[in-house]
Image 1 (cartoon, rainbow, N blue to C red):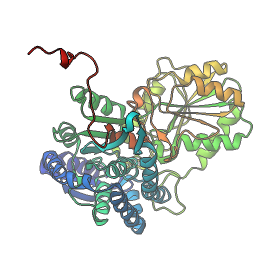
Image 2 (cartoon, helix red, strand yellow):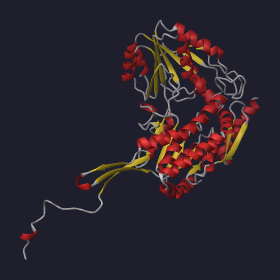
Image 3 (cartoon, rainbow, N blue to C red):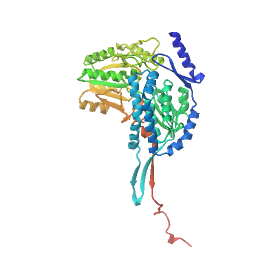
Image 4 (spheres, rainbow, N blue to C red):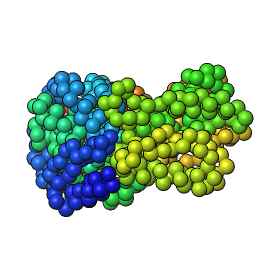
Length: 491
């Protein structure tokens, strides 16, 4: 088995040298897809050539094209969901939910474009008018993540197309097959191939795309470290739009919760859905000292029942593997780091299948750990932190450079008002999990979690720019001051 593992890693290492990109099924380790690495300059040039004709069409024309895309995806739901499950390792039930989100994004984006970027006409003096309209930026680059390889990039692509942009999409090198399938769906809907371009490749191709002079902006979903790198790269190009949707070290505060069983379910959903590979996943569970034992016991009972298995298992698992061996190794190293600093495991993070990236849910008490790393552990690890009072809970919730999601379970309405007012996050929930943000509302964070360009319903804001026009039916002008009286002119 070790020989097979080494061979897979060697193939992956050789992929950029050979000119091919290879994708593996994380649940089995088998190669499932390969494709040729692309060239950023070529794809951007094709998109720029196609953009003027697409932008010249009416919004109604572009909306109709996107409705066709939704119908194509709807028709292909079984094979699309199966591909997502195979390439990411997530359970089939969750993959189907992702395909549904791809379809629903079209209607949501249509509504968002009408609400966020409407045409406005206002009357001014002397019969003049003030008009506000929106223009597309031009060619937009989209860099997609692997955890939701269809839904999250689609959340950028669809609004960008409705606004009249052309798109060059580079999927994560860990989920290229899903990215390719998504782009084919756009083309099958008769959206011109030049308007949606696919760039396959790894980090080198991503950096090349971000640095292409021919792009007018970049929309990114991924890690805070990569987002910081892009922010530095774009520092000297303020004329280009940059929208960053990054990760989080998200707090979940439980305070005087009455229904312990329901609370435990929400904690588990927050921490372990998608094997913890969600930017909104709860990373820190903050509880009142001396009042936590019943809740911790209830959480542990659910963990003990949780099925961790391959995507097509029967019964269906709650969690599949993390994306690959490197990701599993990294999560394990971070877990060991917490233990070395004094963290007390309540449920161990284990590797149940040798040489495959399955991880069991980890639960660790880090209350006494000094200098806890302020990191996004992108896997199924939940850290328990006990505090003395609610003010300390808020302080601990804000004890992070990130600011994506936060949730309070329990407490009175007044306590939630205090929580909402004082916690720094872009998504703040009450008696709900930290994850599962609605697509018909803005989504984004503060701190290291973004750059104040919220996506989801507000994606329309960064896909077009407003143009203000003063308009009159005929020219009419006079200069009232500063000119000599013509009757006083000398001969």
